[in-house]
Every structure is written in structure tokens, then in C-alpha cells.
Length: 198
Image 1 (tube, rainbow, N blue to C red):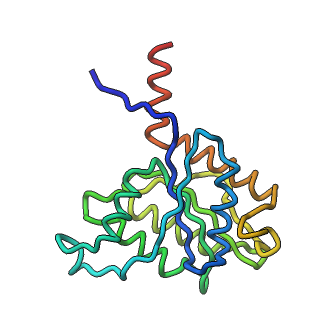
Image 2: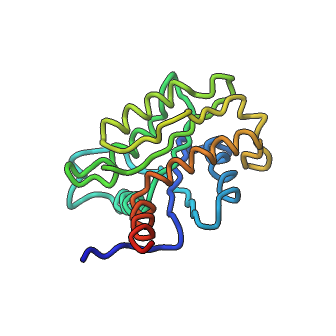
């Protein structure tokens, strides 16, 4: 008989696409943390990784990369918050996805549910970064969240004390996180267990 994993919390990993201390992407993730249900734990990862180098992808994989891959693997789903740089995603985010997509055939991102939130001081809200991020996620066989895209424009006016505080933006993002959680394998297993016992 197959054993079903049971946990009290859904574990999400947030990835801010900017390294800046006052990053709007980081502020969005920090704003979401206290707004989530106690049943959802959102940790924020660090994308300060070396540039991807296939010569270092193997026995000599840097420790920071190994830790990042483990954090991705142990999460039930990812929440990416990204700015738009020159009509696309920042290099630091693409680099992190490249590292996490390896080793070939054993990627921690395969089948992983991922929500992309794009942010921008412009009213467009980083829609081109959103599209590029989802294209990359599909190429590495992740499961991007479907439905209305979370695009936060004019983000400068929606942040206070390093956190997203704009209620409509938070509500919209939280509804997308609900869709993300519904894709998480641990949640599906728990629902299966509940149904089988009913």
C-alpha cells in the first residue's frame, strides 16, 4: 500500500528577481508572507549564485548552488517575483533557473508548480518579463500557474516600509497563490487521502 505524505503546512519558496536591497520584487514577497494562511509557509530564497558554468556542474558544483537546488526540491511550489529588465527577465533570475534545471533528467524544477508575479514602476507591470519567465518555465518542464497573470504596475506607490501594502494587489496575488497551491503535489496527495478516508 502506498504511503501518503501528510504535513500541516504547504512549503513555498519565493524567488526575488532583483538583488537590490530595496527591491520591489523582494517587497512583494515580504508583503505576501504575513497575508498568507498559517497553513502556508513562504520562505524567501537568495539568488546570489555564480554564473552557470557546465564545467562546474557535477562533482564540483558550488555549495551555494547545491543549497539552492535543495531548497527548490524541498519546496512544494515556487513564487517568482520579478522586475522587467530591457523587455525581459533579469540575468540573475535566468541564471538561477538554469542552475535549478540541472542536472539533465534530474531537475528539481521538473513538474514544480510555479507562480510568476511581475512588477514595474511603469503601468505595464513587467508583462514582457512575465511572458519570458513563463516561456522558460515551460521549456524546463515546470508547471506555470494558469489564469489571470499577476502584474503589478506602478509598484513604487504600492510599497511601504519594504513591503507590498496595496490591498487590491495583495488580494489578486493571494488568489493566484491559491491556484498555485492547488497544483502542489503534497496538497493533491492530502486531498486524495481525505477522499479515500471519506
